[in-house]
Figure (cartoon, rainbow over the protein chains, first blue to last red):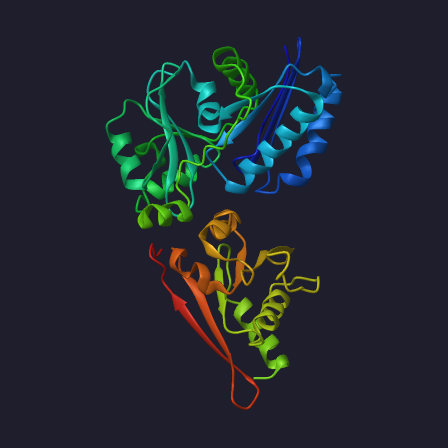
Length: 225
Length: 138
């Protein structure tokens, strides 16, 4: 396989590429400033495994949920490379990518992201399958789901922050709370890219952003209808 | 208040700003919003000269804290506001300074400063600083 995958929806800039046996990945966490670094780092990683963009068989790109601007940076970049090099694009959901390294874990895995405005983007997984919709929940609603879950684990770069949003009064030991993992493995993006490509093929107009939340404009136009 | 006093007032306001602070600047054209913003930037230790982002909409500076300077003067309607992706920094760890902030006042859910400015009858500037809780409080 010759593929590239990127995710700019969170404050981790994640890039992974594969050229046959050669794989390379990078997860750079330094806040939401991916735009200037993205293309130079893609170039650098592809050069390291001697993979010109024209040889790519597919490009995977995160569609979110996550940062509004971050999603657009990723999709615009992926579409630009895909258009120029005539490479098909595949959408990958960030929450799926976060949960992916925990496929074999025994228990419920909750991929979580700070959705701003006091809310949380999440989806739950078990035995490698997603067991909920992609959700935009209040901390109380997610706390309720965790209480009903079996051995829940919170995963994602914002996992600890999200846990603090759910249990703001908690002063005791973290062992009383669901465990967290902040792992973001960019290779998970590649695996999902290949799977989604095999399953869904390519949408000629896609991939499309997964914002989850209605914009204020959509809410207002709904009210006026 | 003169221009120099407005700058000094901005520096004083900057001293109370922390990661995640949101400051709405509200007042008519010529009320001194950008002058106050310059003072706030100076108070935050931004070395660069702050330029009005009326045309660029959002400018970013680095000082003691990251500073996002937003001007919503040319922004009309919800769809345009949504397309700015303001949440990324209104909920981030820097300081957000929003001119014509009344356009997004209803959705600032965190505690914030609301600064109203007007041209006084003597040609100086009046500045009123209020602390608002925001719908979610903290």
